[in-house]
Image (cartoon, rainbow, N blue to C red; front, top):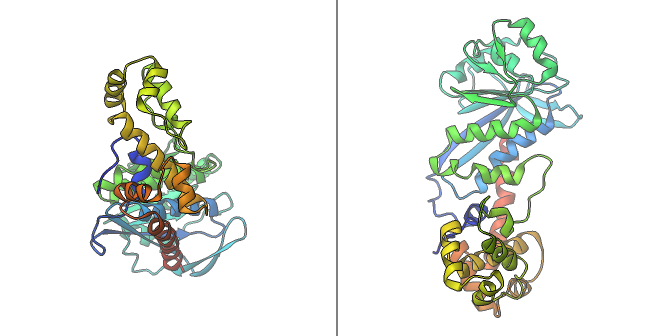
Length: 352
């Protein structure tokens, strides 16, 4: 199987067929402890990062569970209930335990939660979202750590634990303790936890999860401009624009070089230096990236996708797509949706 050579690799790598052997992934178990009136946005942001991690062709499988002090349905801050398992005094056996607070969560010492967090801290990561740093502090787990929390709760936590130092950072993850100040910051905190607990190969893909799931932002289109280095020669910028604007009817490389005012050889050297790929190779990867987007995000026929991305025949498109993504276009469409549904279904089942 061929591999992507250009900067487009990071945007496409999670869509390649996994080469890992099923059953041999590193399994990381994460439990979310839901407090009454917890922030649903915080939970969904953190959980979505983990589920997306399962879709990436890495070596780690994230298993998610939701727990609470009483078990059963826990009402979120917007009134939507989420099912949970009941915490027990024996504690949890998960690699990370994340307590989910929220604006409407009332802070009060909970002996059972204190015991669970202490036991987890001896072997795993403990974390608190929004104002849940209170519970880590109550368990004596922040005595030598700065913590992040929502500004509305900082004064109250400082009143109970005056010896602790609140940070102005959105999130902190260090020495197996993690805290974040808001739903937005839960993404960065969760990604930091994934980097610490996951395989090394997964850590390199964290930026891709962030790009896909940054709260308040949709997935940006992958364009020539979005992957180009910050400072590149003007002729190369022009060449990338020409490629981006001529996907359906690809230009010849000689014509692109002519319009940029340099020779083909000069253009090839600049592509090699700044984009680590020959011009024709980068152009192919750009077209196949667009094809992947159309396959995943639309119901257009695969023949239409081939024509829309500059392939004169479906067999040619079929071969090149399979070379880079490891699956035929049709199998890829079926595989992607099946994997997406299965991964999200697994997370929901684990939390019920």
